[in-house]
Image 1 (cartoon, rainbow, N blue to C red):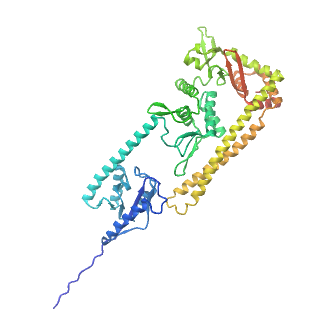
Image 2 (cartoon, helix red, strand yellow):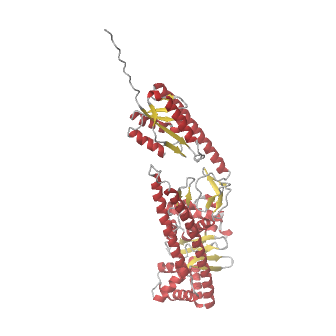
Image 3 (cartoon, one colour):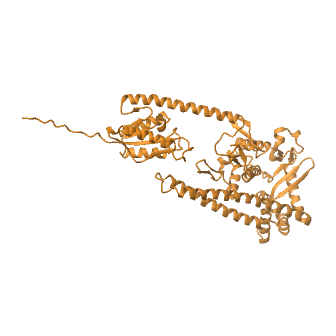
Length: 525
């Protein structure tokens, strides 16, 4: 009786392998065979060598081109983790450990996520598998060295950036409002239209002496922070100013031609937009407002030339102050801010009685209204100011049109990527850019409306005569608050020359027209 032995053939269990590739920069990714392809080819060869154990590579590609290994914010990695969570992957294969992560903490978290789903991890060139205890030991050693290398690179980068800043060089990043980056030299160059806005913002702060009124004016004008395209083509910035962003702009030493580094400033290679003396004056004013909580800015005692009066000799603001005698009488003055810093002997004006100079300005306003020749001169000067504002609006229009062209180009580029997008990031970005496009189109319409208003407010000689005649007729009957309102409406600035004892008045063109309209309709100022 013969016996036959039966041998059962047991097939090797199937192991689904996901190949993950990564490259930190986008350089070379447009080539027919790039670094990601090379990593994948090596991983596929390794998987094929393990075919006898049932290994096979899944068809889905997990490629992160242009993403750092210092964090886990990567779209392909996110898809890989989602597929692991769904139970679609048994093994993750990479070319080298640092392709998955260069952070020991992040790698530990990823390994915990892999272990929870019983997913092994294989590095092709370093020949280990976390399915074995020896593989896990080697992995921890290699990863520690990978993080050490990353920290050394970070230290070298920080040292290089520090050296660049000490030499006054632009160390990279997005440029501030008023500057662009020369693609050839990588240095900052002045953007003429944006630089005009920066000068306008500093002038507004010099006029108002407080942040909130400037923020409100900037919002009315539609002026916003710089809108810049990143190397990936994404648009950043363009948000409306608030107190924080306005304060950061006013305290940015780059506008004075300097570079800040670790509490010190160094002469920069770039050209200044704001003269150093004017920038220092703004810092002094910001410092005083911070110490007093804005008490001076609130103008408690009705000094209606606050924010308007400047010392011509020192090219500095004259701010209101007062003294109070023992009997309770208060005496108001305007003092040159430069004289406060450098001593009163350095300024021919120094301190002037508030009542005297305010009365002088009021009489000048009344005198202009009574003199036809002065009315013509005032109308001509006001028209010149209005035309300058129209030029400023034209610069705003060019900037908005440039940003709108860039946004529309990005929309066109993103539209062609929707079909291949599996992460939803393209659609999300497309929605953001389309919203920005709508905002820019709205801004262009607002600029057009403001241009129309400015053209309507080009003051004629008869409008100036009516406005100043109305001023003369009602001045004495106004309350201090109403007087301040009328002066602010009419006057853009007052320059006092203490040596020559002369006063120059610059008018608000729109204010002259507005006051003339009030006079023609019988409405009190």
